[in-house]
Image: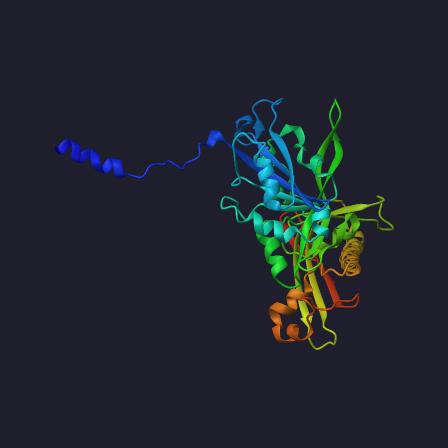
Length: 380
């Protein structure tokens, strides 16, 4: 009798009846959204972990790392359920690393709605990276990294790795997009991605990802516009998160036709000048610069002056490009909101401070030149 009493509690223990077997699931790695003819179109990229060894290189170079499923629906959820109908296994959202929105989705102001629906999937994390594009989504979703590296290490999946070497466009994740849309000026500056054919193999040109600008999305108006190539360069000097960047100058009197310096660090401070009507802003930018060319003292002074001048021009150019599409690219409105709430309430229009080409009153750029491991202040 005692033997039976011992086994009775074991029958009451909870088992793992609702656990999903890892080999019986598809793992969503990336997803892209389009909006065509009044319907949602989704591109779901699933990944095969069995072909990735140590998350660095596929064990078989000829193996297919990814497949992309395409589905449409009148609503977001209908599109997903149409996708489920074509799948053999359950789709797991916990490994989603990036989301791409098409130009159509941004124009129709669907980004916020899609994100709000996505985050209701309990497995999804808020650190998935976000991008916008004009490139056909099928092309982007089928692009693989250089040298057939693991898809988990691609530029879209792991942007911080390449950002530490070239910090032109700051990556943004789902959490940050929601914060930017919720807070003044209610605009999110999302990296713009496209495909590039700058790499070649013996067989053919190798298509890779390239982040070449930003798309600026408003909470109320949808897509305000894109800042691409030259128009976006000023942004790298207006964030203290910049890790490493370059600036190429053409200076009269130097031996070479152009000189490139490496921007090692940026320290930017923005102050709102409330005494002015309308409100204006003073901006101070301090740069740590590495100069690799061998130059004399006279050339050094001239080079520093040209760096400061060029940085100012880049900052103004990007700001003016933003003004043309009515975008607050440097989030000046947030500066007023954080530090002068009463004044912000008096002048804000839909969360934004009215900005003009003359809203930047003073723009000061100070350069610190680094030589080896020593840092020296440039004499004025």
